[in-house]
Length: 463
Ligand SMILES: Cc1ncc(COP(=O)(O)O)c(C=O)c1O
Image (tube, rainbow, N blue to C red; front, side, top):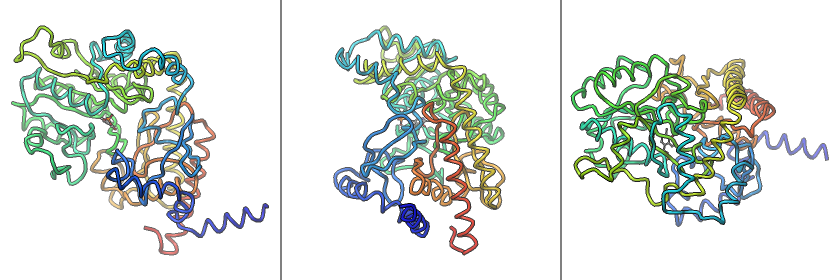
C-alpha cells in the first residue's frame, strides 16, 4: 500500500499541473462544456474563469469547498473575500433557518434593516446615514450619483486599475491599457466624465484632479486596491486625497466593498483614521448574502430622501426590489454582531496569520532565487512575481507590469496539486475558519512549488 502511494506520488510529480488538474476534474470539464452552451463562458462572473476551465463547486463549509468531482480545497477566495467567518458559519446558518419561515422578502421597511443600519452606523466612522442596496456595483453607482447631485458637477476621478463593479459609470480604466474602452457597449460620455489618477502617486493624482478642478464632483478610491493587485494606499496618499477633495469642494468616496469590516470593524477609515464623505460597503456586510450600502454624511445622504423634494432637487437612488430582504438583513446582523462581540482577538488573529503568510511566502521564494512581493493589508494577500526592473508594487500598473503568467502558474499549481484554492491572479482572504496549520500547509505547498520552479528553471522549462 505504502509503495503504491509513493509510486502514485512520483508519477504525479512527472505530470504538468494542467495534467494533474484535468485528471482530477473530469466532471467539472463536462459541466463547463455543457454550461458554456447555455451561459456565456459557462458561468456568470468573468473573474471566476481560469485556464483551462474552472472547477464547478458542489458545496462548502468552514474553510473548505468541494467540487463536483469530490475534490476538497482549502478556500482562500472565500466568496470573493465576502466570507470572513468562513462558509456557512453556525451563527449565520441558524438565524437564516429561523427567518426562512418568517418572510424572505418583506417588500416593506422592516425592523431587520433598521437593526443592521444601526450596527453600521455604530461601527463605520463616516456612516451617519445609509441606504441598502444589493450589489457593490449598485452602491458605487449611487455614490457617484450622490456626489454629482451634491456638488452639481459632473466629473469623477478614479484610479487607473481601480475596480468598482460593472456599472457603466465606473467601468473605465480598469485593466491596461487604461485608455482603451473596457467593453463594447459602453457610451463614450461615461468615459468622458471619468478621469484616471495613478494610485499612491500624489503628484500625478494632483495633476489629474487639478485638470478638472472646475467640474470635479468626486473622487472614488479603494483604500486597499483589490482586483488591481491587493495594494494598500499609503496614509499620506489618503490624507492628500482628503485634503485636496475638501479644497476643491469634491466628494471623497472610499470604496470599502472589500475593506469594510475586513481591515477592522470600522474598515479602512478606522484603520487609516481618515474619514471620507461617502463610503460604499458590501461583501462582509451581507454575511454571504447579497447586501450592499452607500453610507456617509447626513448632509449628502439626505439628498436621497426624495419624499419632499421636487424632481430638480432630488437624488433619485433606490435600492431595488430585493433591498432590505429580511434574510439578507438577518445574515448581516448575525455577522456584524459576531464581529463586534469578538473584535479584539478576531482581527488580531486574522491579521497576524496573513502578515506571517505574506512575509513567509516572500522569504521562501527568495531562498529559491525567485523575486516576489506579497502585498495586502489586514487579512488580505496576493503574491506578485517581480519583473527584472521592479523592486516594489505600489499601484495597479506596477501589478500589471509584474510577471502575471508566473503568478497564475503559482496559484493554479496550488489548486491542481495541493487543494488550495484561489482564483489564479486574484486576491486571497483569511477567515476565522482558517488556522495556523492551514497557513503552514500553504507555506509547505509554496516551498514545494518554489523548488519545482527552480528545477524547471535549471532545466530551461520555466516560463
Ligand atoms: C472594491 C470593489 N468595489 C465594488 C465591487 C463590486 O461589487 P459587486 O461584485 O457586489 O457588484 C467589487 C467587487 O469585487 C469590489 O472589489
